[in-house]
Length: 599
Image: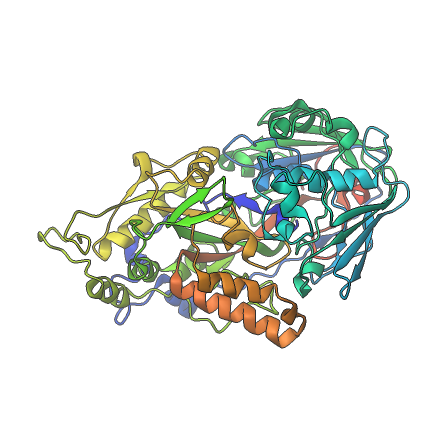
């Protein structure tokens, strides 16, 4: 998944925690559950395979039964330009393929639908479609389709969230966006299969998948008569989307299921399967559904219930590090849609850095990850996941559980208990109530939210759930993105995609910057990561490390957990490869029996 295809993940990556198990209130005298677990030998590293072959011959055709594990209906925005969350990304995998393949370092390679010729000196990327790349309705994919994707995202009427610094870096894009020109001067159509894109600046991140070279095309012949402002709600996107992937969409039951059939026009050849059916399955019933042999795969499998399916008969459990992390965010401003940038609010309730840091020190994330996720999650020190080993700062201290530090930070900042009720007032002596938004879903969502609130209460902070309850997934993100005044802090997760460059999530012009944090120093640190100086590897690593140190200290968001993901694959599925950079294709999948096997 490209960086530009960030996924909003469920924030219910959570566990039922008893406060006493998390080490009490004094880290100098009590041991956390993580430490206790390690010393007793209960926590062990779990090794998973990423490839499953399975025995038996592939039958002709067949239908792959896939569960999409979520407690909310999917949005159903079948467009790489317009979708917003990870569930829609899962659904698009089968039909809406990206232009580029990637290698095991998440760099663009030339094994996909298009090839890339990059000229560093000229600051240009030439993208050429391979012969035979065809939309699922039989029409050829053209250079005009690639151009149209840029024109949609850059248009002033565009309603999505992907018009950011990687697009304004294209020559002529801002003039086009502002209505000063009718075309993007920096993009030229070279022939029916080729476009050339010219950039203002280029850095090594541009060769990263999702690092600045857009990897999608839009079927202009289908969409050209739909107003750009109406695309996201149009039947062409919601009901009859076209792609050039191995399968095509046959039927969508909104929010519930999608049926696909083999795309006979697929440029790599007709898939082995006849059909794929994806159905939404609640987390509470997915294990029983798998035990009954109903599904071949379970996407977004909950890891908090790992112990209930770790010995699942009839399946191989694949596992890998997620390109994601869980975090707590603080609302520090608002999004200005007219200016297309974050507007910080120096008077925001959470504007005091010491308050944010104290709330970070109050959480025992190692206990959460080790004791209750069987080692599948671990306390996070950075906003760059360790899967990006070259730029992740493993030496960054981050925030470890320390209530002494938390209390001192609050005391020094003037947050004191004025009236003797064990709850701190703000530095002006006024009542301080912090509204916390957390998502519903799964059996441990509520206990985790309660753990966080009780942890903060232990350091004297009054934190209450927004509206007094957990929020449904789609409502949660709608309200967080709308900068709802009833949300001061929120718990969520990011799927980072394949490019660790943070500007798309935390830049001043990034709508995904949900904390609404921006400073001039932060702008400079982000710019350094994407500067031409970053072609020097040492400079690049140093720039990433400086940003991680700065954002950790400022704490507009607190990384809480690094995540691993699990994929149950039924024993009748042949040739599934979940390895990063393998360029696995759904067209290669086959099945060896007519229905999923129970053993």
